[in-house]
Length: 580
Image (cartoon, rainbow, N blue to C red):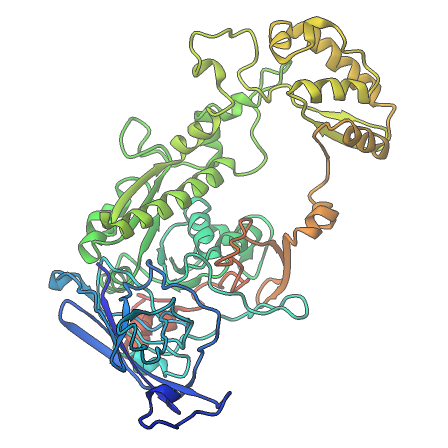
C-alpha cells in the first residue's frame, strides 16, 4: 500500500486573491519562491527533511497528472480561501517489514499547485492536474511499497543516507566521454531498482547488465584474487575484456569473501536494501554458502531472486559443470545447425546459450518486479540454460517435434535452406516466403517462376522439388550480378534482403550510423572502447547509458562497505581478507 503524503507550501509574495483587502494586486511576473516541507508517513512512522531553502516555483502551464506508481496522491480541494488535501490512509505493515528509505539522486517525485479562492458560485472545486515541482524527500516505507523518491541535490548525503556511517557516492573512475554536446541522460524505466549480482561469466552478469542499461543500480560481488573469470577471457586489457565490459558496464564492483561470516554479513546488508539478486552457482553451492533464496528471503522477503543454472535443479544432469557449448549440444541447437550434406553438428560461433538465458532472465525479473508491485511480494525465479535454449529452438527450429501428425518430409527448421547468394563482389541474403516476394526474387535474377505448381505458397509446400530447382537457378544467375546491381533490383522487386557485412564493417554501415547504435569512450584501464547502446529506446524514460565503463576489480569496495555502516572497519576487514 502506498504511503500517504502531506505537503505544506508557503509562497512569497502571496497570490493577490489570498491577501486581505479589496485593492491588493501582485504585479505581473513578480518572481516567486516556493518553500516545501515534505512528509511521508506510513504505519505510524514519520520522517521528513526540509525546508532546504527557498526553491524557485515551477508553476508553469505544463501540467502532468501524478504517477500512480510513485505516489498515492490525494485529491486537492479548495474551500473558503484555504487549500487542503484529502489524505490517503496507508495500511499497517509488520514491524519487520519496515525499511529505512535511502537517499538517491535528485528527481521530481512530487507535484504541487496553488489554488485561488473559489468564487461564490463554486465553493468547492477540484484542483487541476498538478504541475511539476521541486524534488522532495522520502521517508520510512512499508517493504511492499518500494516507492523510490529523491532528495534535493543540496542535501548532504551523509545527513540523509539510510544507514549510519554512509558516505557520499563517488563518481566511478573512467567518467565517460561522448560526442560533443552529450548530456547525461534522464533516468531509465528501472531507475531506483537495486540489484546485487553475485554471478559470473555471461548468463547472470548480462541479465543484470541489461537491467542496469535500463536504469537500475547494481553492486557486483566478486572473489579475490581474479574476480569474474570473464575479465580474462578473449581480448582483455587491464582486467577488462570485451565480454566483461559489455555485460558489466555501469555496475559497482566489490571484492568480498562470502566464505567468511563477516563477508556474508555484508552481503546480507546489501540484499536487505535490494530489489533483485542474481546468482548462477551450480545447485547446492548457494545453500552451502548461505546465499540461497531461503537465506536471502529471510533478510528481505520482497526480494526477486534470479537463480540461474545449467540444466536445472532436479534430474540426472543437475550437478554437472556447464558452459555454453554443452547446452548448445544438449538442447539440439548444434544438431539443428547441421548442413544438408554434412552430418557433423555445428556450433554457433558465439555464446548463444548464455545470451539466450540472460535475455530470458532479464524479462523474468521485470515480470516479477511488476508482480511484486501488484502485491505478489518477492519470489524465487528458477531458470536453466537448457530450458531457455529449448524454448528458443522450438519456435521455428524443431517443427516435426511440435506438429507431431504433420508432413515431415521437409526440414525441421524453416530457416534450414537459408543461404547467401554469391555475387561478383560480395554476398546478399534474401528471404522470400510469400508469393510476391518469391516471384519477385525469381524475376530479379531472370528465372521463370510461372509454373502453376509453384504459383502460391500452398502450391510450393506440395511441390518442394520444383521450388528447389528455381532456387538453384537463382543462385547460378546471381553470380553474374554486382552487389550494387543486386541491391537495386531486389529493392525494386520488393524482396527483403540484407548485404553480408563483416563485424568490422557494421559500425560504419549507414543505417547503423543513422540509428546511433554505437558509443565510444575512454576506459581508465582498458583504453578506447566502442560498444552498443541499449537496443530498446524508451521515449518516456530513456534507457541510455549513464556510466559507460565496466568497473575495475574491487573499484567500489570501500564505498559500498562504508554504505553498510562499516566505514571504520574497512582496514580490519581488508586485513582479515574479508574484502579486497
